[in-house]
Amino acid sequence: MNETLFSQIQRLFERTYARVGINLEDCLIDNLRCAQLSILAGRSARELSELARTFLRTANDRLYVGIYYSRWLIEQLERHDPRAGLSDHNIRSLITFVEEINHALHAAIQFKNGAREIASEHFARNLELQAHVDTYLVLLLFVAFFRKTQRVSRTDRRWLRFHLFARQCPDAFQDRNLRTRYLETIELASSYTCYLDTLNAARRVEEIRQFRSLDYAAKKKYILALPGGENSSRQLKLICEN
Image (cartoon, rainbow, N blue to C red; front, top):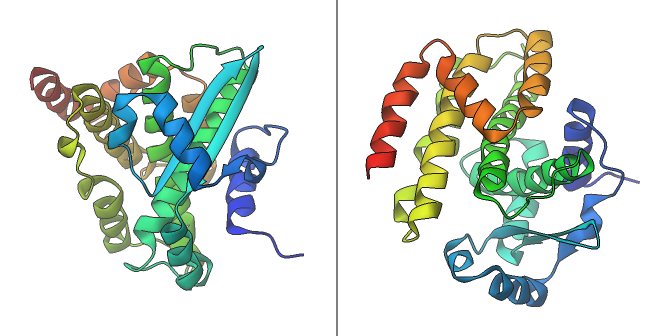
C-alpha cells in the first residue's frame, strides 16, 4: 500500500522530533466543519488563509485537532505531485500543506509535554516559527532528492527563501496581532535557517531538536544572539514600532 504525501511528511517529522501516537490524517475535516470551527475561532480567523487551516482546542484534558485543506489545494498537489519534482507550479501549495501538518504535530508534542495554554499568543507564535523552520528543511530535502549530487545550490536556496519568506505578505493582515505575529516569526525563521545552512547534516538535526524544546521567548532570544542576529533585532524593533 502506497503511503500518502501526508503520512510521509508526518513520519519525517516524527523521526526528527517525537511520535505523537496518532495518525494526523484522521484529523482531516471537510468544508462544513471548517466553516463551523472558523466561526468559533472568532473574528481574527476571518483573515486566515482559506486554502488550509489547523484548529486546536482542549476539553477534559484532551487536545482536539482539526486540519483543513481546500479542494483546490489538494488538486494542485495531485496535478503537480512534489514527489515527482518541485517547481513554481507546486512549491506554494507544498509549503501550505507541510505547515499545517507541522502545526498539528508540534501542538500535540507540546500538549503531551504538559503545555495547556494553547490559546496564548506565545503558543501560536511558537507554532508559526517552528513551522517556518521545519518547512524550509523539508523543502531542502525535496530539492536535494532531485539533484544527482544530492547537493542544494545557492540558487536553489534563494528560490526556496523567496517563496517561504520573501513572498509572504503579513502586512496585508488588518488585525494588528496577526500582522505582527507573522512579521516577527518570518523574520526570526529567515535568520535562523541561515544559521542552519552553515551546519552539516548531523549537527543540524541535533540543533533543531534542541531548538524545538525551547519555548517561544527562549527561541527568539536564542536567534537574536546568533551571529548576524543583530540584523533581525533591528528589524523586529521596526515591526514593534509600526
